[in-house]
Length: 70
Figure 1: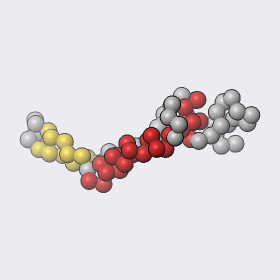
Figure 2: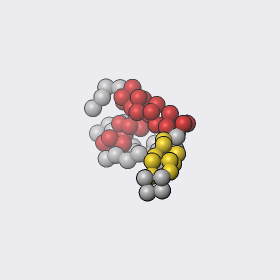
Figure 3: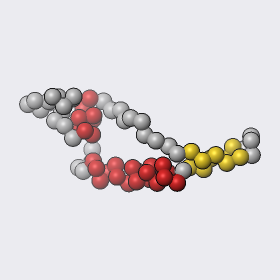
Figure 4: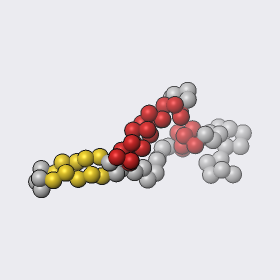
């Protein structure tokens, strides 16, 4: 578990942002054509403990642990 999750995730998110801006070229050999796609992140999933950590919330063992921003 990284000490600073934001600094751990930032390099990967920067690469995804660059792909969204410039596009990702994909070669289709069957059609002899290059496609340009722009990947997006629709949602992220994790187990209950990790989701609280990713969202920056108190975990399930906290005094007032809540997963839906109570």
